[in-house]
Image 1: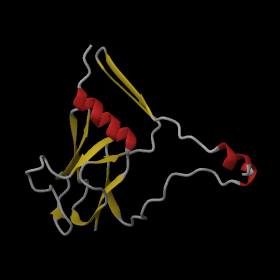
Image 2: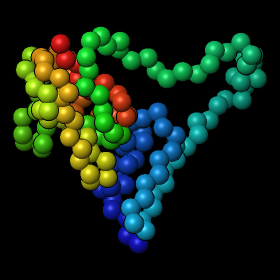
Image 3: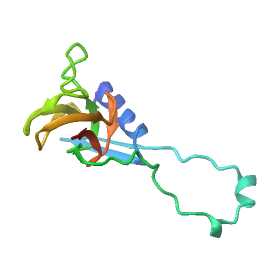
Amino acid sequence: MEIDQTALEKLTKLLENSQLTELEYQQGEERIKLKKAPTKVNSNTTSQVDRSDQAPVRAPRTDVVEGHTINAPTVGIFYTAKSPQEPAYVKVGDEVKAGQVVGVIEAMKVFTNVVSDVDGIVERVLVNNEEGVEYGQPLIQIQ
């Protein structure tokens, strides 16, 4: 079995840019499982910390987004255009219609269109081109 190096690099990038600790993908008989290495903790520091006083671990806070957002329909890498040579699907100030493609998400060479579900004007693009995104993550804010 020969693993596609490009696909492996994209999976690795997706894992590194997310809160996930492991990622598993299977297509046919090919199966890839990636895990983040655990971070080492200095034993001197942990022995001095009273764990009962620590606050629970929480995901990093993101910007509070008001109004309507177009959210990621799947996990993957978000692209603002079809290709690097093409202009972005939308930019701040553009008018969008319900059903209009506003970006794409790629995961393992499968592209999923990100489609606006409302008419409106693009107020903010909340993620960068080629940034890893999670399911349901707000991508574009519409006013």
